[in-house]
Length: 485
Ligand SMILES: Nc1ncnc2c1ncn2[C@@H]1O[C@H](COP(=O)(O)OP(=O)(O)OP(=O)(O)O)[C@@H](O)[C@H]1O
Ligand SMILES: [Mg+2]
Image (cartoon, protein in one colour):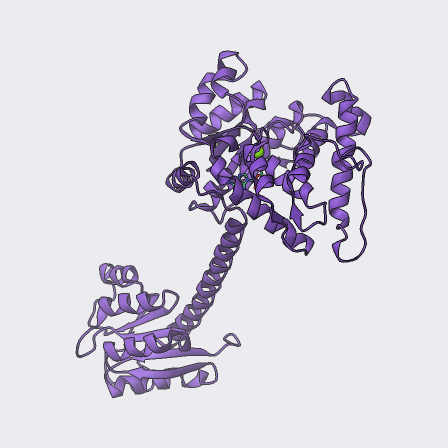
């Protein structure tokens, strides 16, 4: 009748006679319900639980026992040792069975259920036996569920920690220390955050850190590139639509704000948001409600909004391209990420980190950076910021040499053409054996050089995209990935 698992009980009962009555109550289920231990005092029970609460599923306890800790205090202490343990209280019938306040106090203290004893001396079963057996069974189920919930929460926390370690904000400068401090301070606030800073400086990284340091870390983090979506699709991507909302809406579509419910939405390149979507976003920030296309009543959502831009948003407002009211709503907390040239003391740290990271990927030794090469890297102005530095490190590693010289730095920075033909379009050198370059890196380099080549021979981005056979958003994404801009 019951499940297949054996239910292990810790019985807290000080009267032999009552212990016997519990035993006879569960006797018909002896294969499935087992009293592991009997403790005659509260402190003995707590010692047993501290030694191994995993040995028990359900604690059955007499409400009034002699000596020391008992009752609600004991319930609380048991729960403090192991919150997933379930407790069933047994009380004398002398306690009024309609005393709701008493029952409520027990539940508040952490009990799962309470049963009453039969009055008089019936030694076969003192409890209402079926109620008792069923409550044991249900308590055991709840114990399993609670344990599973705790296990998966632990697993998810570990995943988040792993993610955060990959998304670490590096840098030992005061500016970076301050940025990390601000992130920790803002993370748990519900207020919108506007992240500003030049391209490649780490805004997206900051957004990740805000989410994964917040209490929402186990919920969705949904990044949306407002500049990468075709204008006529932005609203339906963000807010979704109902089936039949317009011709072609053959099914209902969830908007990203709905998907992110209870989590975080990251609006990257927010300055690119078209006017219509700006109005709707304003409403989400004001009322916490979204307007789905084709739906009359609004939908409540609970999302934290983080936005980023490399534009001067106040100037966009001045120029009439961005709504002022929306600007104020987004700009409640502001995090400004500095350009790399504003914290040049971090450059060697970034260099070391990215070289090590790529070398692990490529399964090769980390090359030494010669002092004059390091000086050259430190004096570069880094218009593309950390992203540019990361790309330059990758480019330097195309060379299998175990030292990085000033000359190879010039080449990688694109400031000098190689005499050997390297750095020109098509100037690939190949090596076989241990130092062979992984295909992935060669492909990347080919893409980079070819895109640069075509760009240099095009009248506009649109023209280059067309020649390359790419849709403009894909073209822009690719350029960004390749560090071309
Ligand atoms: N402080 C930092 N520590 C480690 N890595 C960083 C740091 N800052 C930036 N990066 C790395 O540099 C690259 C660019 O960062 P990110 O994409 O966050 O820049 P961004 O400011 O969002 O740029 P854009 O405005 O072009 O979107 C990423 O690979 C990121 O991991
Ligand atoms: Mg970005």
